[in-house]
Image (cartoon, rainbow, N blue to C red; front, top):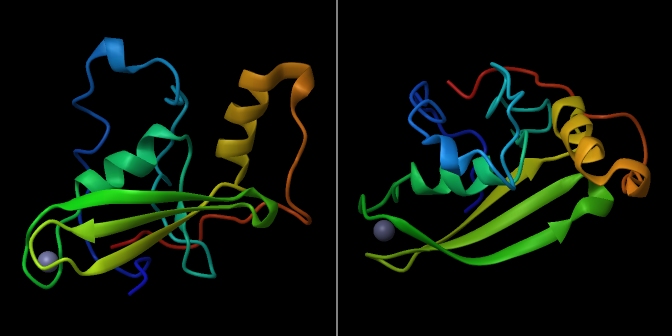
Length: 133
Ligand SMILES: [Zn+2]
């Protein structure tokens, strides 16, 4: 099963973080389109940390147990990042596919890498299309 069209409210995500968490992997310039869907159905990621935050805030649709990350697939050549998880209860496998081609992510990433930044995907950045609501 592939996530991406899941309906949820995540307004609290990101608002309870302690200052010490705002370090590597966290984009201080996240905006309101975090976790929106692209037209293709990918989840908008605006940094690395938000991807694990999203997984941690999601429970298994089948049994309600929490999910544990088993793999993080680098699909940067497609402007994507995929996190594979297993349900701690029923062992169902779920994949979360995040868009990292969007301007918010790439601007943040370029700021981290400075002169070492190279765009890894072809074409224009994907745009936030609709809230994952
Ligand atoms: Zn389950």
